Amino acid sequence: MVYVHRANRCSVKHLITVLRGCLQSKCVTMSQHFKESDENTFSSHVESLYSSAFIVPPFLFNTAKPLRAAGAATVAAAPSRGQKDTPLLLCTGGTGAPKRNPWDLKGKVSDMEDKIRNYQTKVKSLNQENEVLKDSMSQSQTKMVEVETELQKQRTKIREYEKQLQVLAGIQEELEKVLSDKNFLQKELSNLEGKYKVMETLRDSQETELQTLKLSVQESTLARLQANLRDTEEEVRSLKDTVAQQKDELYAGEMERRRLHNTIQELKGNIRVFCRVRPLVGGGLPKHIQLTASDNKAITLAKTEESHTGKTADTQKNYNFSFDRVFGPQCSQQEVFEEISLLVQSALDGYNVCCFAYGQTGSGKTYTMEGDEFDETRGVIPRAVQQVFKAAGKLGEQGWEFTFTASFVEIYNETLRDLLYTGKANKRPEHEIRKTATNEVTITNLTYERVTNEDQVLGLIALANQNRSTAQTAQNDRSSRSHSVFQLDIEGVNAGRDVKCKSTLCLVDLAGSERMVKSQSQGDRFKEMTAINGSLSNLGIVIAALANKESYVPYRNSKLTYLLQGCLGGNSKTLMFVNIAPEPDSFGETLNSLRFASKVNDCVIGTATANKK
Image (tube, rainbow, N blue to C red; front, side, top):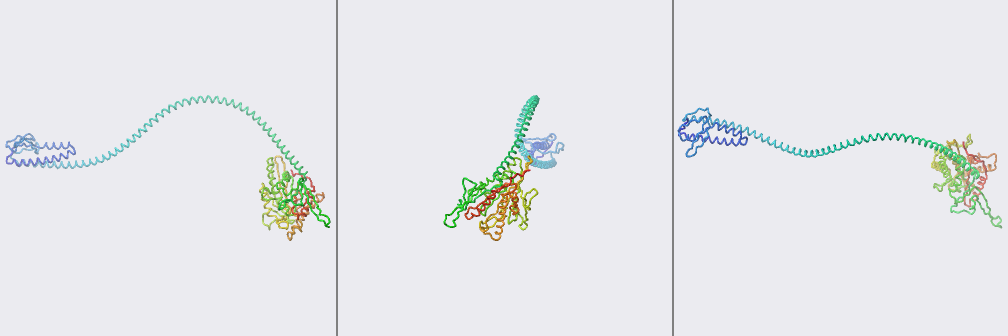
């Protein structure tokens, strides 16, 4: 039993009130802390506090009656001062604490202090636990923030995964559709494979039938083709025979054409003379030259002679000449060449052909032979070259192959000069006329150019014209002071017929012939004139000897006649142009030229033969 003295009741009551306040304050603080952290921890601490507490009944403070101990921790409550009994929470030492006497207030206070110290120790441990719980709470909050951040990231990833999942869902739908199509196509493939096997079987059977048909068709076709081949071979042999026969006929026809052509040329004369009248500067025809419109082979020179006594009237004397053809002033270059084109053709047939122009200075010899650069005014030489190459091209279709070699020589003061020489003048070689073993006339050290077309020949002619000797006389500002001889050697081969032919086309432009008194030549011009007239005089002597059929013909009297020996008296067809000037003061020279041409026209040379092997 515990008895409390009334004198100490106030101090004990005060102490209990203080303890109660401290405990309540501590409990409030702990309750706030543990409610924030953990309710279970809070309730466990409260239970521990109440398990060690004891309740002092209020009547202890107003009665001195002893109280019976109520076990280890007995709590008693009684109303005080008209109030209901309120339990008072006190800390006890436990169920094993020794009981003190009621009057031992000091011991009780000591026990209370011990209990307070115990409570302080517990409060301190609770504070430490509270700090630990705060740190744990801070770490938990930090982790919570990290978790929330990670949660946001995961939510973002989840949204992305949801989007991808939607895309995959679409892909899955497409895949399902593709799989469905695949299954359908596999079924179709299976059907097609079955059909293919059927078709293969059908194809094999048809191939077998086709092979059988091919063999039968090939056999029949082969027999038919063999028959056609035999017929074709026979037809080819027949055509070959026909072609060979036609070639023979063509060759025979060509030979007959050449024979007839040569016969016509012989009937016309192997040496022919054409006369050409140069037009006046003002046009028209002078009175002393008379041409008959109905007769293109006659020309008349009329000369009026005065009476010596004066008692009789003037008399007119006519000089009549006849040639193979007379060309008036109005005739063109084309008309002139048409008359000699057949003669040029003879050169390709293997006959030597010579054409030369004779006449006084200024009578139009060079114009007739060479002409101008324009097609309408080109002369005999360029037109003859053009015809030769054109005819050679046509004969090439019949198996003929031709080679052409050109040369151009000048006879100046009885000296031979190479007009195609391109070296230095002081190193110009000397030339001599020689005869070969086959009696052909050649010139030593002369330039022979192989030509294949017309343009090459025309280029050589232009080079020769630059090198030719010309000078001024009273008759002409630019008079040719030499004889120029252009030669084109032609060699033809027909390998199929084993026939060869060789000929020479010789085109000569003679120097101007006039009397020395009229030309008024002096010094070197006088020497040139003497040489020109001497060679032309010897040409007249040779022609006269040929006309009289003399046994000896003086070809060697001049270089001109020696060079033209084959053309004048040998195996050749010769044409002479006599050019006359229309001026009245040239009457004497015109008359001399016509008389000389008449002598040539009367000349008869041997029949020309083709040079064939």
